[in-house]
Each structure stands twice: as C-alpha cells, then as structure tokens.
Image (tube, rainbow, N blue to C red):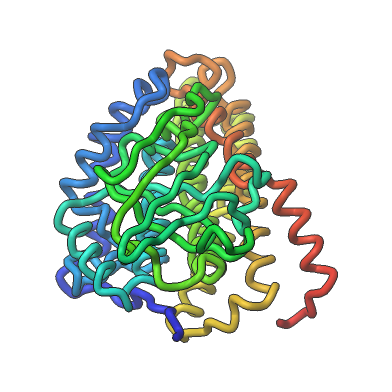
Length: 399
C-alpha cells in the first residue's frame, strides 16, 4: 500500500503570514528572552515550549481533520527558520518534534490507533522525541540490535540509546528496533512509546559546546505497550520517504535562522560604526555584503530542495525516493548548510570584533558560533559524504 500522504494546502482559517508574525512574537518574548539562560544552564527551554503549546504549534503539521493546522513542509521549514533566529536549542527541539510528527502523519494514518493519536496530539500539544541511534551500531540508522517482542496484543522493548534529545521532557518517543528477536538487523520497525509506559535510565549527561538546551543525554530505554503502537510500515520506508528529507530540510532551515540572526547582529554593528563617520562606508560593510551573499545562497539551497520535496509529495511520487538522485541532493543540502553556517557566523564575528566575542554584549555571537559547530556532527558529515560517494558510483545522471 502506498503510504505517501501530504499536507498540500493550508486550511482557510489559518492565515500563514499572520502565523509567521505570531511566531516572531513568540520568538522575541519567549525564546530570545531565555536563550542565554537555556544555553548557560544547559536546560530544557520550558518557557519557549509553554508558548509554542499555547500557540498550538506542536500540531502545525497535523492535518486539519485531526485538529491540527495542516501546514506543509515548506511552511514548517519557514517556521523553523523563524525560531532559529531567537534560540537555536528551542528551534532544534521544535524541528526534531516536527520530524517525528511527519513520520506519523505520513505513515500512520491507515492505523486507527495513530489517527486517534494525532487527534490527541493536537488537543494536548504532545511533544514527540526520537530514539534511532543505538550503542553498538556505529550510528547506522538502518541497523538495530534491540528488538521489539510482541505477545498477543502487547509489546515490550529495551534499547540502549546514546542520544535521546529532550528525552526526559518528551511525552512520547518513536523508537527504532528489529521487527522481532529473530529478524536481521536491517528489518526494522518504528514503535511509539508513551509517557507512563517507559522508563529511561541515564547512560550519559549533556554538557556540550553548543545546542546545550536540547538536553540530548543517553538512556537505557525500557518500554511496553499496545502492539498497535508499532507503525504499520517498515522503518526503511519511513526513513527514505520522510525522516531523511524532512530532517535535513528543517535542520537546514533552523541553521539558516541562526545564521540570519548572526548577520543581523553584524548589520546592526556596522550601522553603529557608520554613524561615527557620517558620509563614509565603513570597511566592515564590505564584509557584511560578502557574508550576506553566503547567507542568500544557504537560504536558496534550503528553499530549492524544500520545493522539490513538496512537489514530490503533491505528485505522490513514491518512486523518486527509491533512486539515489534525491537522496544525494538531500545529503548535499545537509553538508552544505552545516558548513555555511560556520562560515557565516565566523564572518559575522569578524565584523563585530571584540563586541561579538564578548558574552555580555548585545552583539555577542558566542552562542551562535558554538551552536554552528554542532551542525556538522548531527549525522556526521564524513559519514554522509562517504555514503554519497558510494551512491554516485552507481547513480545515473538524470535519475
């Protein structure tokens, strides 16, 4: 059965331009206001998610028939870019939540359980997390050591996950594991585990250079629940059609937002410098023009692949995800964006000078720079580039 399903149109009751304006307001009032303490204390951005829940943004991608906003991937990416301008950690958590919502929306609607779940998510503004990586697999998402065991209409599983972002704050977690104890490592399913049905014993803490508020500690996750909580398609299909492209698009978008704020701070600094010498263009303005060009290229690349992915969803082109071409372009987007964000923030720092280097300056770029270096490590760029090299050896141009 073809499981492709997309949110191709926005409900008439939602004015997207007005929604973007509201998200900017939330960003200023609830994200930016607490971004420094979230970063300094490496704590979950409680204030941000209280505001996002109040605005019903956790169900933005849920179809309107289940009570959500029914936004499409292009609109979700734009919201992630907006949030990235105010707090990188909050934007990253929101993006990761949206990825999990997309997996359920696109691959779970044939199940009565998941249709009911989407209604519950929209009503209660549930926060979803993910447990895909596992100790012993070397970061390979298409391989699992743990297995789900089903007995009648119940399941149980135990997984050692080196990273579960905001795992202690999540209401629900989508977990990858082998279909059964007898299944090979590559025969995986996606299982929804619910708060109250799982325990998470810490394996590691989260004291990092950047994205400190994502609270991405490791846990031994033990869960049990109704067998209906297993998504009705293979994880390979979910990863290829949804998780992989959706992740790199929303990550690229929020990284663009972080880069935009860095450039905006650099622009504000140049304006201050320009007022000191009326009638003259400061030399730093040349660097500002250069970095703005890189930012434009970064945003264009994100929007280009987002449009391509949205078109594939609208045209119901499931075959496009079976070839290598789209996967290569998706990987290229991730690698390119994760490199550009470091370049952009670094250039903005040179423009702001010591004012950007200081933690107590309104032009400070310390948090932006530290967050930017995390981008290349989220699914390591070397792993992605090696995979692309393998695919390119057999890929035929135009396919």
